[in-house]
Every structure is written in structure tokens, then in C-alpha cells.
Image (tube, helix red, strand yellow):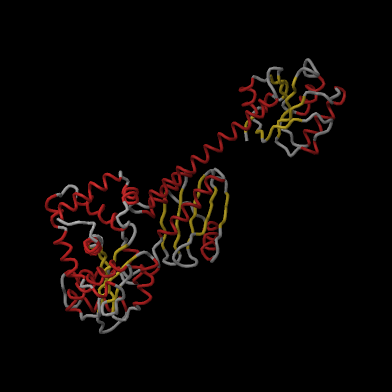
Length: 484
């Protein structure tokens, strides 16, 4: 809504009554010459008239009716009907404490409407801009380091208050700002956490307003976001809180991640020191006895791998990163079919070793790495010892990788600066079956640049890419080295 004094200032209107009520909010501008327009009013209007149906002796009744209908102010246009505002109307407005403005001939009623619509549009665009900027900032923060706490801190700063994320499954909380929780807020959070469908609650006190929103976490229920501030900016703040709740739901660790810290610490330390007792500690964590072990080598097919995500998917706290490859330890009894299906749905490809005793985990690691190369080649996770379908089954991946290293060595040795660009161009050009324009479009370069790079590759590798056998060999070699 727009304050009445804005119309006075923008249009130069003269205040004839109600000068102490110029801060009245105007919801709408309405024009009516009816003797009784009250049935068509909803309240909060600046009602404009020129007096075509107004009789001065009935001004008191007219003002009483529109005042009862909730009109915020009257605007009277002088000429052509009246040369000045009827004094009876001025007296009636003063008696009813209803603001009355004189609209001069040079100001059209349409101008009054334009002031309202322009201000409302400007305010709406400002709120949209505020919402967009807040959402972008939340997304950037959620993708950065320490995403849970930093997202909550950003949300608290946006509303000028505090934010708290509750995980009742693990009995944990993360906060931004300084939460102010009383028994009523805690009880409302418990109700929202208990709901298996989207739920929310709003609570107000003398000095703060609290909004509670359910969060879709790893389990059907148990998570809630509470945000408190002295003032909430309505729809915009509610949309920002909803966005934050969605992002936080993606960041929440699953209940499988809640491993006893002392067991993880003992097992990790024993493993690092190559103690003969490490496997007993690991067996305690998994609840198995006399286990043999599998090694999993996994790689995320999109985005940066997160050890916490892999630990949740595998149900194992024993995970580590080696470059772009994540390595994990599993007991022989782990349900491999379910695990590989879960990894696939989550965007991971994995190579899984066959079971090995504790003293031969080095062999298991090498075996898992070979299986991962095959998995990356064929686009599906591979368990060592299981039958592999397709071309990958007929290829020795280790020998193919050695061949690829030798075949592309001239590019690496002679053209260190642009070897990566040349290999990328070759891979995309081969994938598009030698189509210059499609390859150029994907690379974001001119087609002549693609032709020049392909010519360089032919020179460096001493080959002719017009030959189908050469293209096939190079394509297989690229597949063998592009992932590992």
C-alpha cells in the first residue's frame, strides 16, 4: 500500500481536511460519481469524484456512508461542475476526521491512479529483486564450505534475527544468529518434526515472530527449520525461508553417518599405523566377525565428490579421497546389488573388489581400481569377478590404458600448453562422428579452429583421421584415459 502523503507530494494536491491523517495507507484508487458508492467499496480506497451527482445539503450523509465503508480519503476534482470544493463537504470531512484533498484542474484522476500503480510496481520489483538476490546468495553458500552453518548464518542475517535447523533423528542442531526458543516454540518444532507431510507453524510474541518450516531430509520426518526476527517482510521472507529449507534438506547428513567417534578414530589410527588389529576395530563398527573385506573405488559422474555422501550410500564410515577417486572399505557381507543401485541413482560409478583377507587389502585396492576403469568405460558399476557385458568384456583395460598412454605421449611431450585442448577437441569431434559444426558448437569455437586442431593432432600423432580404424582406436584410447 501507498501512504496518502505521497499523492499530496507528487501531484501537489491541497489538503482541506484530515491533515493529521496523511500517513493513511491507500490500497486502491477508485472513481465514482454515484450518490452512494459504498456498496462498491472494499476499504482503504482514495475515492475520487467531481461532484456530478453531489448535492451540498447531502454531503454529511455522503461522507458518513463512505466513511463507514472504509474509504481512507476523498479527492475532489474542481471544475467543470464546481469551481471550488463545496464547504459543506469540507465541514463533513472535518467532522468525520476523513482526509479531503482538492484535485486541481491540471491534475487528472488518471494521474492519481498512475502514482499508486507506479509505486506498487516499484515496490513489487524491489521485493522480487530482494528475493532473487537472497536466493542466489543462499545457493552459492550451500555449494561452498561449511554449508549448513553458513546457510543458516546468511538466512539469519537476511531476516535480521536467527535461524535454527533441528535434526531430531540424530539429536543435533545447527544455528545462525542467537536463537530465542521458549517452550511453545520447542513444542511447535516437535510437532512439525513429527509430521510426515509438509508442515509449518507461525508464532508471535511481543518482540519476535517465529516461522517454523518442515525440512525434507534423508528420512520421512524428524527435521525442521525455525526462523525468528522482530519483523518478517511477509511473502518475500517466507519465500526465502522456503528456499533455505529446500537447500538445507539436501545438505542434511543421513542417520547412517552417525558413527561412534571413538570407534572411527581407533580404526582410522590403527589402519594408518598398519596395526594388525585394525580389522577387529572395523569389525566392531560393522557388527561382523571374522570378516573378509572389499575395497570400493568410486567416482562421481557430476560435480565434486563428497565423502559424506559416499559414506551414507555405502553405510561405511571408512572412506577417503585419492584425487577424483573415493576409496571405501566394506565387509564381505555388504549387500552389493543394493549398494551399486544406490550409487547409480546418486550419480556414482564404482569398481568393487572381490573379498580379501585383511593382509591383502593392497591387492583389493588394485582390483577395485581396475574394475572402476571398466565401469567408467562401460558406464555402469562393476564388481570384480562378475560377468561384464559389452565391449569392455573383450578388452584388457590395463593394456588399453598403457596403449593410450603411449599413443598420446607425443601430444603431452611436444605440446604441453595445449595438449588438453587438443585431446578435448579430438574426443568431442569423434563423438560427433567428425561433424565440424556440431563439434565447434559444443567447444564454443569456430569450425575452422576445430579443423586446425584436428590437423595438428594428425601431424603430432602421425595418423590420418579419415581412416575409420584410426578413429576407432583413438576413441577407445581416449575412453581409457579420460576418466582416470
